[in-house]
Length: 485
Image (tube, rainbow, N blue to C red; front, side, top):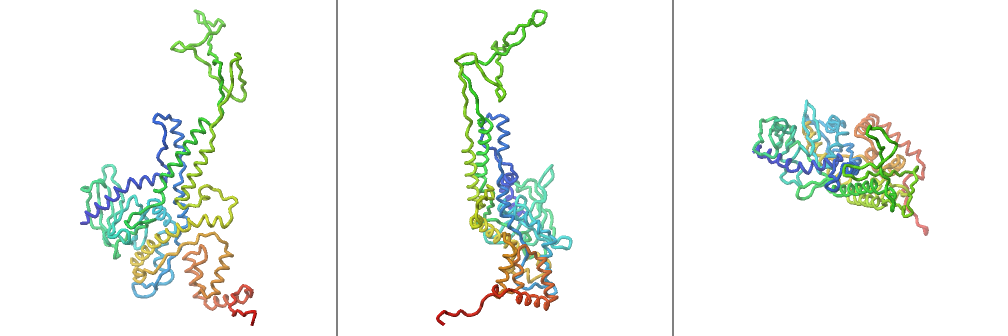
């Protein structure tokens, strides 16, 4: 049965690989060539390479820069294997730091946004619980209900593809069991072999977690790059046409009629090969006279001996239409991808704060959608890490949630004023600490320890600050009195 699962998972990888590799090429700037004549010369091909304006990385980078996990909040108190409550420097956040996920989470998010999905593997390695990212190019998973299940029935990740007559190798996870797999070709099911049992992971389910940017009820995932490829090709084609017009028709062409170009002359020699001082026209192999090339520049003056000669010029090709077409395509790209136009066009002059906020609204909604999807996946990662660490309460805690960094631009004075007013409304002081922008989980843990170590000092500071605050800034809770009274 495990062989059948391995064949199924490798078949999924083989089927999706062409599409995923095309997406990867577009992210790296290796795009399809724009249309050009079949007999195009090297100059055309060079212009085609220079016409590539790679916007696809920006479609990934813009939302990804607002997707930073800064902490994790448990829904219930955490207990260790001995039944005692675990302190604030909890095991799951220690696992996050040991896995260097402060930085590596970006690769997981970028992979999911680009390909539509990515994966992580949580396991105990050398006595430590570690989570690492897995690419969709090398990993696949199967679900009983792919649209609604978060835990896969089985997953496979390729560790080495076949090359130089060497077999490909892969790790197969069927629930908590890991098996070793070899194969000659992913498209050849008969070449797939399950060679040995590796180990049983200390989890009750498969340790691989999927991160999906967008998923429908059929279980299909979709990233931000694939729907934009046609628009990206349109932009490249327009830029290519602009370069052609700019190279061949953007300058003024001088014309002359009623005048033949001068013939190329050569010196006449005698039988002894000595020049006679006379000149004669030079002819090519077909017996036709060879004409001199007419060179025209700012330092040359053109004249003709015949009174029938007429001089004129051809106007250069206007480029404004091409430039406007490029701007239009970029605006279409911004609208469809929910990316603010000023992020792509760089035009932010004379925009009010309200206009900028309105332009960012669509992107903020898109980022919130990604946070909901990725947040569920990270919560499962924390539950797996807690289970591997013997933290049974957190492993079964489905009320825990990840905390995302607040990336909205605002001054510290505005934040402090808002938090102070929330405190006056009765919100607990410690509950407001997480609302401070860019505060990390490590800092919160440190503040908690200091507050517990010196509770009387902290309370005295709060009372003193409240007494020193101007009366007008305090919340007025006195009952209203009518003018009639």
